Amino acid sequence: MNEIVIETHNLTKRYGDIVAVDNLNLTIRAGEVFGILGPNGSGKTTTILMLLGLTEPTDGWARVLGFDPMRQPLEVKSRVGYLPDQVGFYDELTAWENLAYTAKLNGLARPVAQRRINEALERMGLADVADRRVGTFSRGMRQRLGVAEILLKHPQVIILDEPTLGLDPEAAREFLQIIRTFKEEKITVLLSSHLLHQVQAVCDRVGLFSHGKMVVEGTVMELARQVLGGAYSVHLRAVGPDLTQALQKLPKTISVQRLNSDLYKVEAQEDIRGEVARVAVQVGAHVLSLGLEEPSLDEIYQRYFQGVTAA
Amino acid sequence: MKPVREGSPWRGLWVVVAKEMADHLTSVRMGILEVIVLVTAAVTLYMALRNLPSGTSDFLFLRLFTTSQEPLPAFVGFLGVLVPLIAIALGFDSINGEFNRRTLSRVLAQPIYRDALLLGKFLGGLCTLALVLTAIWLMIIGLGIFRLGVPPTGEEVARGLLFLLATIAYGGIWLGLAMVFSVRFRQPATAALAAISVWLFFTVFWGMLVGLIVQAVAQWSGQVQLQVQLELFLARLSPHTLYVESILAILNPEVRALGPLLLVQFLQLEGWGVRSPLPLSQSLMLVWPQLTGLIAGTIVLFAIGYVLFQRQEIRA
Ligand SMILES: Nc1ncnc2c1ncn2[C@@H]1O[C@H](COP(=O)(O)OP(=O)(O)OP(=O)(O)O)[C@@H](O)[C@H]1O
Ligand SMILES: [Mg+2]
Image (cartoon, rainbow over all chains, first blue to last red; front, side, top):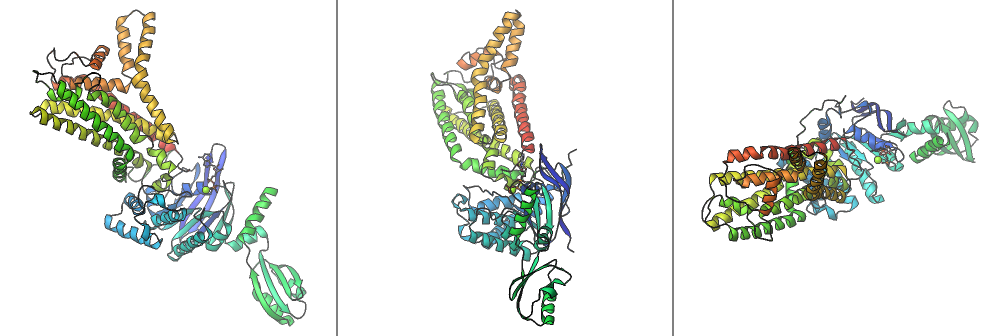
């Protein structure tokens, strides 16, 4: 198992009577991409701010890379790149000048800073507009400049608060691609969003937030099992004898539906495609296709919050 | 209990100071104010040179700052208005401006403490003010040497520098106040209005208010001594009074005591040179409380801004 990079223990933040974050216990390991998912006001941003030492927790503690964000914020902030949910730059300065200021605040020596700024702008496709005033930038360009700023710190951890907010679908897709490259570089990523399919597309693990609590946590598959019950739907297309009985007998099967003469849908607690194939062949059917219907995070999210509001 | 923070609170301070100064010195806002100060200095200097009393050659250079021609006040009179204006212009949007541009959380996510950002902004503003004032000061002295044909004496230079220092300290008060409001109010316009209101209150209305209070006390108690003391005390709560008193004694070596009477005298700019001048050390003793008052006021205002800023939520 990789080392723990972000850890919180009963982390709590209250604003008067409002509990923004409620006894949060979170563990994120090196190289993971972790997604915080939740409706507005569920405490995502507050959690992130506490991890960076920008807001003081009311109770509990957090560790980022082994440092305490309240006591050692400089250590944390020099190793963690943060993209706020609404990122702003000095409009009257150029992209390059904005990054130069950040580089100086990080104490980078001039030659190092110059090299890193150019690299970062290049990588984010902003090299051509490096000397343009940020006032003329589009939302997408600002967002990419925000990532360029993070990159020039060479961070070990990157925290993104709603990074695709306000981006068009194409720009959002590119952005997710960038997040994947972080993963290849073994950078730990924590990102918050309420765009479920995007989270599903890049995150290794997801935490579902509701009213300041992390209500479920795990891989999308694990979440599906917890929220949807037997989450694995295996689709089998096979011609021959009726397989319903045989499939029902498999130990992990929850239910079997025969959708039409040669199509079965098996709900199971695990991925039992192997067993399904074996049984089908044993009974003497011709297997035409076999597939796993992945649970969608959308479905999980909807199902979960329906359940919560109904309760 | 608050945890002990590690790392220097001043890390990144000079980066912020340099950025602030660069911003101020290239901004249109400061450009306009610099032109106004420059024009004021040029006009009052011209008037002063024409109106310097002939014959007397004592402290000619100091008189460049204080000599006026009706109906215009002298340069120091203008400074009493312009310095607060510049200081407020430098500070009223320093924190809320970052907030509204959404740069605050991004900057504070860099490895610096809030302390460095706030002090950096304050020092950046103060250095800009000092730079502008020093440039004007040098210009006046330089033109003075050119027109008078004699160099200033050591004492004139010392008094001139002290005058410069007092003026910067006076600016520091209004800069500190403007920054407190820039932390407190989200809208820069609100902060600017609040700061200007406070300045107007102390410069224009405070004197009248003190007069009323003293009158009321006079009806209740006949002690003249008490009334005078009360009036002095109340008047000196205003930074404007402190500033006027200090430059009065610094620039006029003949001034031997400070009080309400002399204030009036100063405003009319009469009563020159009848008595023998005080040495610099004596004048300094005279204005020491005023000077320390101005500096202490600046520090207190900065501390208030600091406390407010440390507690503030930085998110939009
Ligand atoms: N300064 C504050 N004072 C009082 N309440 C606050 C403050 N900041 C946040 N809150 C409350 O804390 C709760 C959590 O807010 P937070 O911004 O963390 O939610 P979020 O999950 O990031 O929401 P969003 O998806 O809208 O960004 C909300 O109920 C919010 O009203
Ligand atoms: Mg948020």
